[in-house]
Image (cartoon, rainbow, N blue to C red; front, side, top):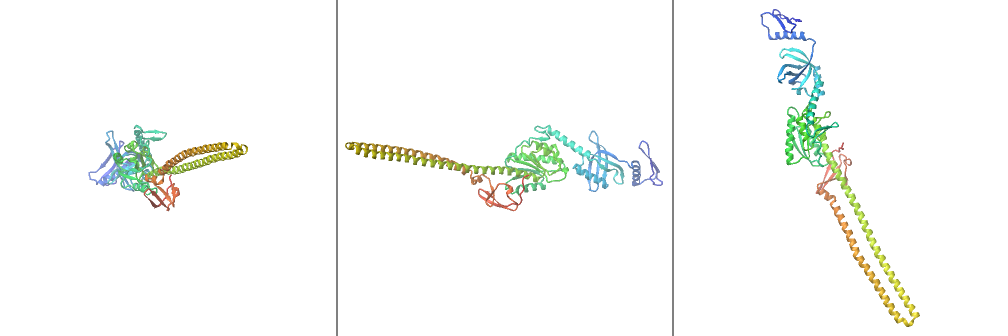
Length: 497
């Protein structure tokens, strides 16, 4: 194949031999550099016209200007030193669009591809100032996705070799997942960026909720994206652990406020995932992603999509405990009222039984006395009529018998009264003692004493509120404490998911 340069009186012909060597026939007159470059460009264009190649190489020095992308392609030898290097560029609108699609599909920005191997279709061109350069026409996202997945699988293989980390029925089990959440979450360590909007959202959600829970939130700030992000977050985990020895945390929350999908790459690293998997305090993640789950998510105790959802999870956890306390409180009130009513009824029955028994015994003794008196009078009259001679004797016998009967009756009545006098106070004292014990228990369960132990209850128009569904946004509610009450306006009502 031959190409003519068209520089009169200087270069006659440029020829490519079978072995690829360029042969030039030229005069002794000097060429300008641009002329020589035109010759080379023309020769290369003739040689490579209409041809393109898929090239596998590593990217470095990537510069993304939006409508243009510049970079250098290198190939490394066995000693990890560059064995080949060429500059390249993406200049045309169609390839630029393909690169943007590549970013959407892989979740990895072009500017973050430095150090990554890529598979691109290129043509060869010569630029006047840049020299020999590759013009990129396309980039294979399948190759990049394969590389990223290989990296993820390698991280999972490393994690699976660690004690306590294993995959069971498609779910990862870790020492952190095996931890139990505290009954109430209050002291929270938050690992995030100092400028992350997600941190503000998290704190605002916790402290702006109408439930009135108090939280102690302590921030530990780290890099969340880019080079060194995983190491920075791991260092903050160490700082949390050291602080935990002095002032124990209930949970550790790892959050970020959204961002590009490629920013999640540090959360797929073994550097961060393994410390999270073995951390001795439950870790809750809310790193702002909607589609993919990072490896750190699968290692943590609880994984949520956003910082706001992480805050809502904590609120819901505490609300569930509060509901259990309210249910127990209502049950105690109902049960104690029932027991008191039963004891009061039993006491009334006992008192009624004692009163009835006493009246019956007195009636029986009175009947005996009446019959004795009647018999005595009847016998006396009969003796007087039938035996006037024995009146004196019978009179004495009658008087003696009557006195004896009367004394016996009075003695029996006195004994009965003594028995009743001894038994009645004992029974009444026993019943009063039982009532005193029950009253003491009820006093301990009185709402005022419960409030003194740090609890509170919510009411509206003197009606106790037990669920969030009873209150609408814009209504005024009162929070009752042991030493007073707060009246507040409900801004919003968010139902548990």
